[in-house]
Image 1 (cartoon, rainbow, N blue to C red):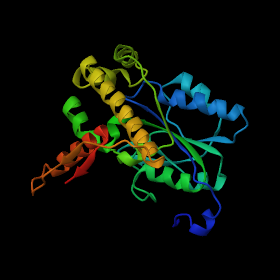
Image 2: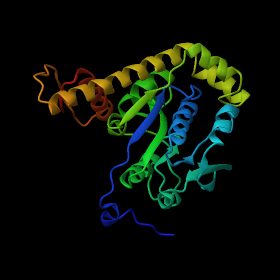
Image 3: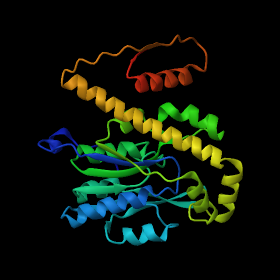
Length: 275
């Protein structure tokens, strides 16, 4: 079925929905559970809350909490011999709840979807006036992808623009100690046993998880700095930025990495950036 995006006249008088991101540094820290707990408080306060898409089969406690909510039907797709589920965006727009829960902000949609990335689906829900709760691991943020690759040896393919993270109405950092996360990995609560052993041996050592955690904390702090600076500008504060980062670019294939690094530094220093 061919579907066009929402028409401007359909949005007339509608207020932009608010985006809340539950972020952390790795799978298994409890982002989805924290999202559901917060949503339950909203539901008990009388808000119309539904689940658009939630992946919690391996977490019984999370699954139990999810049973309190209306769940929207998903689209089923067979991909590489396994069954995946995609959010039914049109069904969610038609249902038009006050608040919808959508796991995995950085997800790459299947071929043939209206949008390539799930964050674009969420942007359409927000434009329709629907508030959205979602989850993400910060290593999926575009500007820190190179740093993550240097830590883990893995280049993350599913990425979101920094602007999606920085412009969210609220970001809740869900944080646990790396050793506690390793215990969860070892117990099979995050991956299946064989996958967990391979992950712990190859990539997600305590050293790597500690580095990813530091990265998450710093990136959330950078976002706060951006909000602070925006507030100063809005209220005509007398703060002046002293830092200005200049990057020289050429035909080198490393340009993209250099620009991402410089953009992240400029954001952290609340400075200007010129390429």
